[in-house]
Length: 215
Image (cartoon, rainbow, N blue to C red; front, side, top):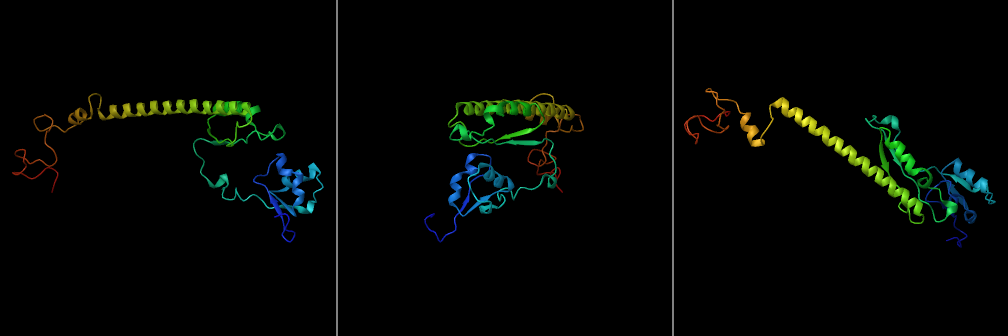
């Protein structure tokens, strides 16, 4: 396409960050270079690739457009922290991942706080760097262990609530059938009633009297 001189050639990357690919000298072959904002323009100014400032066009970042400001949401009981580190890149020159130097300590500190953590690493994490792969495994193990701890705590809380409800309703022992029999309203002679809602007053067939509870 670059050989078609009549066309206007525009470069827009799949991301816009401090990686070398976001300010590559190869971009000089395009008529315009689209960047997110002033930071993208400044990257090309710093690298001094003889790229005209007029070729830089700030177009914004459409992807976050659907993201609503926090003020529009009702705050939940627990804050949510998203940790989405990039990968280690194809070489050490563009290794910008935070996983290796600070990923594990960061997650450990967050786990010490009352927050919910969403961990979403780059799909290529650990492909080139064993250190990045080890950090990724360590973080996943930390989060798995914390999840199991929270799950067990929730189960213990539910058991405590169930025991309290059983105590309030007089259910202390026996299976559900036994507890249902014990909970029946006594007859006039003090014995638990064995009649069901559809049983007649004289006999098991219910033909001689009106069914209980039915008008």
